[in-house]
Length: 320
Image (cartoon, rainbow, N blue to C red; front, top):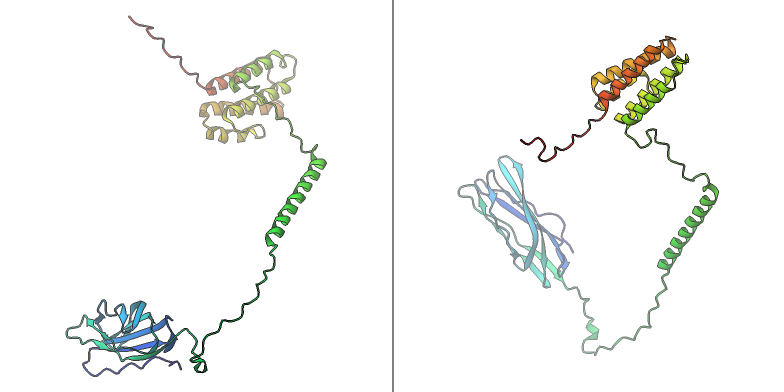
């Protein structure tokens, strides 16, 4: 029968340095089974268990693992607890010997001692039948071959994958037949600058606007609407910001954020505001004023166009 419970801690006599108890569970096991061992040492405050107090072997038992932990026991005392695992590798009624736990940290401290613990270790082999003593062992009858049921799991998974692939192919074919015409690639949008730099494009657009002579024909609204469109489209392409759907009051922040010169941005905003006056306030400038507005647009382009790289100086040019 396995013994239950921990051994009671020994009462310390006045002036004693420390007391220890040892408990092992279970008290009956087979060869090699792990046994949980607990050692509790109570000592005066400041006392500590010396390193190596528990060795690798305790009598006929092997220490598999273990460590110490410290807690406060109150009343000026400290409790050291060792928790570990033991194992025995021979059978019979064995005894875990009494242990002596050296203490340090307190002058003249006597070591703590435990009581021996009896443990029964049984063999892993079944007990022999006394009635079979002296009889020769007879071989047992051979067992028939074991039958193993076929495993179709891999085949079933492969067929399931093939089925899913066939279903996906059928859905793709149906979608293609139904929506091929609708999903045809749309042509790319036209490049408003026709693959030329924005400042080159805007010079041609402004010249074309003057050549149409809209102001001379009295088409003032159309003239300023075209001028506003040309300036916005140029600044959009030059600084890669979308200004076409923005109002005049909204063009300044994105242009300044994109790095446009502040003076040019202010001039562009004023020009667009004058275009708005013609569109909304019905202001009617004359042909000379219209041409002057185009000149202002040219100056905005000149102030914002990219700087042309300087040509390298020819070798020997300017030599004395």
